[in-house]
Image (cartoon, rainbow, N blue to C red; front, side):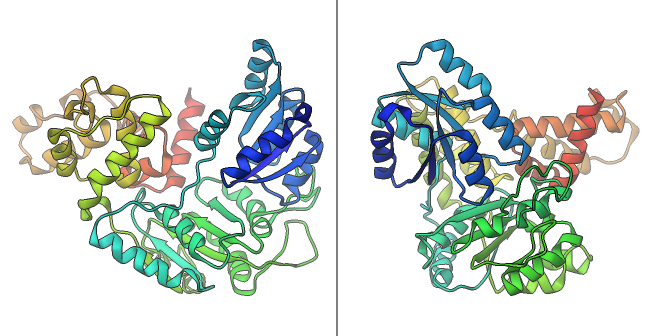
Length: 445
C-alpha cells in the first residue's frame, strides 16, 4: 500500500511513518495540498492520503474530484477538538486519527480503508489447479486474461500473480473499465495534457504511466468501447501511449493483466471486441470456476469472512452452526465469493446466538434469490388462465413492465449492497446497461 502524508503534523510524521512502514506501506510526504495534487497528477500515486487537519481538506477533495482521482483521505492532527475533526469529515475525509499515533488504531484504519491482500483462501482441487497455473506464469512477462463469473475473485488472482512476479516490489494498478464513462476512459488510461478538453485544468498521468515498471490490471475489459480498443491495442502491442492532447509518444514498461466475466471470443464474433486485441491479451488464460463448482471452499471462505468482520466490528468471533453450513452448501451462489462475503458480513451483525445460525444467513428472503425462483416457477406452469390467476406474479398485475423492471433492478442492487458488477451479473445485463438504467431512474426522481 502507498501512503502519502500531507502536512508537517507537528513533528509526528516520523512516528506515523514508522508505524505504517512496519505494516508494509510505502510512504511519501509533501508539505501541502498543492504539492500533493501535483504529485498525484504526475503519476506518483497513493492508495491513501493522511492529511493534517489544518490543511484545506475541502479544497483538496474538490481538486481530486475535478481530475477524477479517487483516493481516500484520512484527517489527523494533534490536540484537535471534536468540531475540527467533524469539519474534516464533512470536508471529505473518511476518518479522523488523533496524534500522537496509536499503532493499533492506524493499523485498523489502514486495513479498513485500503485493505490489500494477496492471500488466496481455498481447499478445492479446482482452485488448486488455478493457483498452480498462476504460479507457473507469474514470472513470465506475458499478458494474462483472467476469466470467470462476476465475484469469483479475478482481481485477487491478479494481485496474487503480481506478488509472485519479478515486479512484486513495484506498483500494482487496477482500473475498472466498466466503472468509468466511455468519454473519460481514454484519459484514465493514457492521461491528458492541460487544456486537452474542457475541465482538463492540469496535466494528468494515466494508469499506463502510473504503472510503469509494475503491473496494470484492466478489470472487466469486455466493457470497453470498441473505438477505444484500437488505441489500447497499440499500447499493449508496442508499450507506447499518447496522452490525450499530447504530441509526444511515451514509452512504458508494464506487465498487463486483464479480467472479463464475459466470453470474449463470443464478443469477438459479435463484433463487440477486437480479435487482434483479444489474442494480445489472451496469451495465457486463467479461468476461475464459480463458487458452486468448488463447494469445499464455501465454508472455509465463509468462516474467513466471519472472522474478518467480527474483528472489524469488535464482535466476538462465532462459528457456523451445522444448519447454517448446510444452508450455505445448498445455495448456488449466483454472486460467488463476493455474495458470500456480503452475506457473512450481514450474518455477523445479525446473529444473536453463540453460533451463527441458519436464520442469520439471509438467503431465502433476499431479492436475488427470490426472483430466479419465482421465474423458474413461472416457467413451469402451464399457460392456462386459472394458473396465471393464482401465480406468484398476481401482485404485479396493474404495474407497467417499466415499473417492474425498475423494482427488480433496485431490489437486486440493494441485495448486492450497491455492488453494480454483482447486480448486473445476477440480472443478466451489462454493467453499462445497468448504469444507464440507474441514470434514468435518478433523473425521474
